[in-house]
Length: 108
Image (tube, rainbow, N blue to C red; front, top):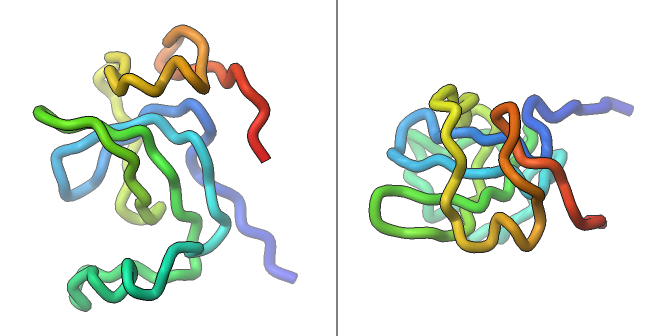
């Protein structure tokens, strides 16, 4: 059995490699676990492999807050040292400290 380890942790702030948004990791799927319709909507030339961790993010860009589902290959650590302003952050996490958010609730 092949065991995969996620590169990013719950509470870690990351940003998308290609698109202008960043977010806080609040859940991780060891492999793709979304709908085929969602997956096929990604242009084929930029469609990531399903066989890698996928991250659920409380995401933000310059104008919006939303939940994003992103492959590991499309994420990089956010090195701004700035907190994320997503309004749901404090439903799951404590105060931003040392570049990350401590988990405040138990997730499955």
